[in-house]
Every structure is written in C-alpha cells, then in structure tokens.
Image (tube, rainbow, N blue to C red):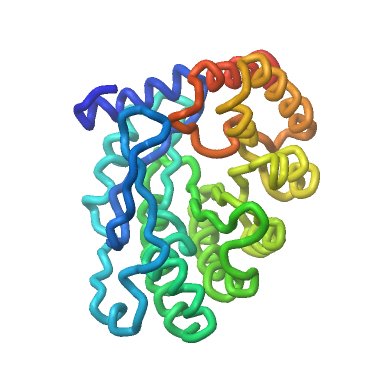
Length: 306
C-alpha cells in the first residue's frame, strides 16, 4: 500500500471498487484523548503490535478529573480526509464515516470499565455528566459529516456487549446511552442519511430499543455463537436491514470450500425480501486467509444478485 497519505486514500477507493464494494470508510481525525493503552506482540505474526484499552483505569474517574479534562472542539481540520475523498469516488460509490467510537465505548474508555461499573451505583450523576459531554460532541460531529455530499450513510460504531449480555445493564443503557442514539439518528435522518449500528456482543435485550425506539436503519456485527444473521433477519428484517454475517471464525479457520458452502447457505437464507448486504460478521482480521475473503466475495458475485 502507498505510504503517501493521499496516494493511500486513492488506493483505498480503487481497492474497494475493484473488489465489488459500493462504499469506502470515510476517516476523520476527531477523537477523545484518553489514557495510553496496553500493547503486546501480534500473535497473527504479521510483524505488528496489538493494543487494547486499560479497563482498570480512565482519565475521568472523578468530578475533579472531569473539571480538568480538556474536551477537543469539532474543527474544520478534522475533516480534511473527507474533503479529499469526495472527488476520488466513482459513480455509485459513497463514503461511510465512523464515529471515534460511540457513546458507550467512549464512556468506558474515558472512565475505565471497572470505575464505570462502580460509578453506575455510587455516582450515576457523574456517569450522566460524562455521557452528555461525549454525546454533545458526537452530535456536532454527525452534523458536520452530514454536510458532505460524498457521505452516503453514517456508522454508529459502539460495541454494546459480549457473548452473553450487554456490557452494562439494559436500564443503564436506556438512561445514559440510548437518548444520545436517538439524537444522533434523528440528526442523520434529518439530513437524509441512514445509520448503520455496528455493535459487537449479545444485544438481544436491547434490540427493541435500538431498532424501534432509536430508529437505526441497519445492524452490523453478527457471530453465529450469539445469533446467526439469518435468525436476526427473520426476527427484525421488516424493520432493520442486516449487514454482513459471514462468521469470522469460518472465514479465519475454515477451508476455502467450507467458506464457499457457508456463504452460499447464508445468501439463500437471507435473500428473501432483500434488506441484507453480504459481508463479514465483524472486521476483516489480519489473520484471515486472503483466499477465504475473496472466496466469500466470489460467491456473492455468483449467487448474491437476484
């Protein structure tokens, strides 16, 4: 991939178009400063390092921390890449920008997961104050992104759970997080943009909230061990599009023929009535065999147009 940032941007567009996608991820540079994460060697042996969040601590654990924290403004310079991206897009392709993580992930990142869990009981007013500071700025970010004609949809990327349940209780999500979902989604809809919720984990307890009450247009991130995408589509497909769902475990550890057979089956299960887009259940990992990824796309070209 080109090292020059502008050449790299053009390369991304070319790659996505050549592989059959009708979108490219639009990158802005806005983020919330936090603690330095933890780092370790990448077990995928690609010569890289992996980093993850320190869930024991965060920069905003107390009211004093909140008073001293400098919240970044949403400024013009954060959108330089989006401005450059627009002229590069061929006809029929749009950009889908992501948030710098959503309201919950930023709440966890800024407070620390463990301090947040204690604060939900000991000091819910502090949780509310931080959630509102995050939400207000993400709303400004959405408003600015909606001004760009190259933006076709917005991603609300906010992991809500793990394998068996949500990261914080459904009632806490309804109190602190989902009111901001509604505002973000309303903002996008006012500008004619649909919103794709990317949320990992078991969200079954709050699907009615995010789909019926908040109004998301599409849901991404599916894992068979939690809920296969076809099952979600049968349950919610009349109200919400389903995105992806080709299980990352199959893509990472299966043979090419297993990937092809699995992909054909999911296409057959999901295509009735439309409202589904072929894709991976989660990220395209660096340990996923490239041949398996292309096998999935190839099966989509052969069987996914109907």
